[in-house]
Length: 564
Image (cartoon, rainbow, N blue to C red; front, side, top):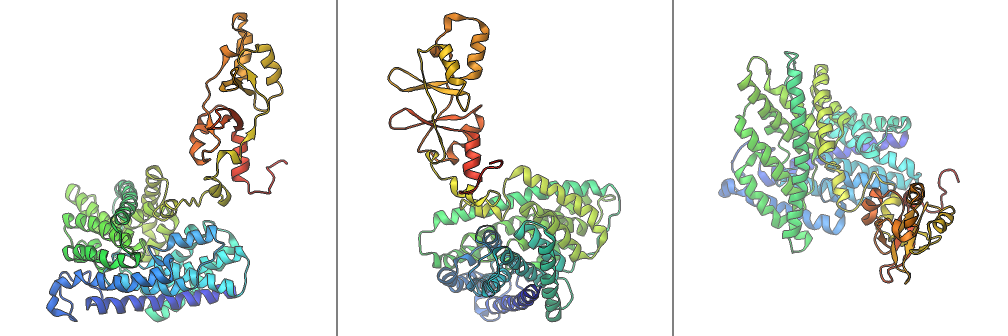
C-alpha cells in the first residue's frame, strides 16, 4: 500500500511536469499555447516565416528528440503502451529507469513540434518506469513488480486526464490483463493519489469540456448501434494504416535512425501546412467537431488527415500515444455521422454532439479492444449516467467488429510484428522457431510394402499411434498404414488385396529441419501424427503428434504433463 501511494504521488507529479513540458515546447516551437485550432497563422517568434514555419517545427523537434531516443532509450520511440505490456508479460515488469526522463522529453518535443499524437502513451510509460524503478530499489518479487508497474500506469492516466476510474481500468484491462482483487486495490490507491495531486495543480476540470448528452427517442439506439459497427471498422482501419505507413517509412529510410525524425519531419510539416488542425494533440479541433462547428465534408477530411498525420508521426520515429488520436477520429466520425442523419431524418436523429461522444468511445474500443476502459472514460468525461446505455451498445458492437476484422489490437499488433504473441505462454513463443527434430518422437516400428495385412495387424496392435510407416524394398518411405484402413480391409473380406502396398495412405509428411511454426497448419489438418522425414536421406526418423506438440511447446521444460 505504501509503495502504491508513493508511485501514485510520483506519477501525479510526473504528469504535471509532462504537461508543462508539452505546453512549453508548443509555445516555443509554434508561438501559441495550442496551434491546432488557430488555422494557418504565423509563429510570433519568427513572424517573417508566416504560416510556413510549420515546415520547420517538426524538423527542429526531430533534431532534438531523435538522438535523445536513439542513444539513451530506444523503448521511448512510438506510442509506449506496447512496451509496457511487453515488460509486464515477458520481463517481469522491469523497465529501464532512464525511460521515464527520455520519454517525457521526447514526447513533449514531438507534440510541441507538431507531432499528431497523444500524451496518454507517454505518461503510461513514464508512470510505469517510475513504478518499476521503485520496485527494483526495494527488491520486490516479480508478481508485485508487475502490480507496481500497473500502479504507475494508472496514476499517469488519472492525473493527465483527471480520470481516476479510467486510469484504474486502463491499467487492469490493458497492462495487467486481469482483475485480481489485491491488484485492483493497489491500482486504485495509486490512481486516487495521482488524481488528487493532479487536481490540486491542474484544477478539477476534465481534459475535455463536452456537451450534455441526451437520448431523445428510443429509435436513436439503432443509430448508435450502427455507429458502433462503423466505428469498429474505422478503428481497425486506423490500426492497419498506422503500421502500413510505418512499414513504408522503414522501407524508404536508409540513413541513421537518429536523423530519421528530423528528415521525416519535413514530410509531416507538409501535412500540417495543408491541414494545421493536425498540429499536436488537437483537443480544440475535437471540441469544435463535436459542437457542430464544421461541415460534414470537412469532418471527413479531418478524419482522414488525423489517421495519416498520426501514422506519419509514428512512422518517422516520433514519440507519442494513439489514445487521443483514436478519440479525435471517433469524435469527427460520430459528428459527421450525426450530421448526415440530421440531413436524412432530422426529426429522429438528435444532437450531433451525442454521436460525437459515442464515436469517441467506439473507435477507441475498436482500435484497442478495451471496452471497459472506453465506457468508463467517456462516463468520466461527461459525468452523465444517461450516456451509459447507448455507449455500451456502440462499444460492444465496435469491439465485436474489431474481433472479426483483426486478430490484434493497435497495441498488440506492434508486438506481434516483432514475433511476440502475448496470448501464448512465453515458452511456446520461444519454441515456435525450433526445428521439428527437437520435439518429434522416434519411430517405434516400420513395415514393408510387400508384407501381409496379418503382419500389419500384429505390428499395429503394439503401435503407439495406430499407424506405421510403409517402406519399399530400398527402405524409402511410401506412406502409412493405419488401424482403420486395415480394419476396413479385413471387414471387406477381399483377400485379393492382402498386401500392405494396396492399402497405403498418402499422408502428408514434414521434414526434421522445418520449424514448428511452419508445420502447424499441416498438423492441424492431419487425422493423426505426421511422419517426420530426414530431408537428406528420404527416410522416416520420427513422428510429430498433437500430444507431443502440446506437451513440448506449452509446458515449460522440466515440468510434467497433467496426470504424470
